Image (cartoon, rainbow, N blue to C red; front, side, top):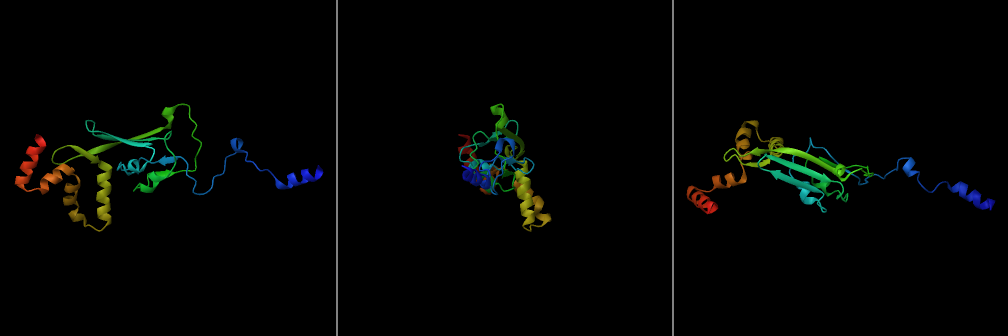
Length: 180
């Protein structure tokens, strides 16, 4: 009996003191996604990559806003959102304790303003996304003197760009077909 107690004493404790002491997590642990709305450009790449549809985007053209939402109750902590985010606005943290008092506490939201098209005044893309694209073009070596002409193109919706590239007869046919 004493021999067994000696072996147990030498082995130490095999369990963690988890609820009373913090649980150590290994490097690369995929826990709760941390979202930084200041870095987000509302491009919705994370929404397309999310397998359980924990991320959603709703566009309200009347209010000229886009609302980004993360429902932690649906998240499976796969890390796809972190992989595809071009600005690093989503990162998986080591936090795994997600107990809350109500379901509403599991929802994170951010609202972004949409840019209006220079030609037709239709909201089409988040302002931060257009500014990010312009910043990338400058970073790639485009001279600042050409930036204003590029800005006009970036601030035009895809429909107006399409109409602009068509010649006059095709544009009239397109408008007539689109109106019918």
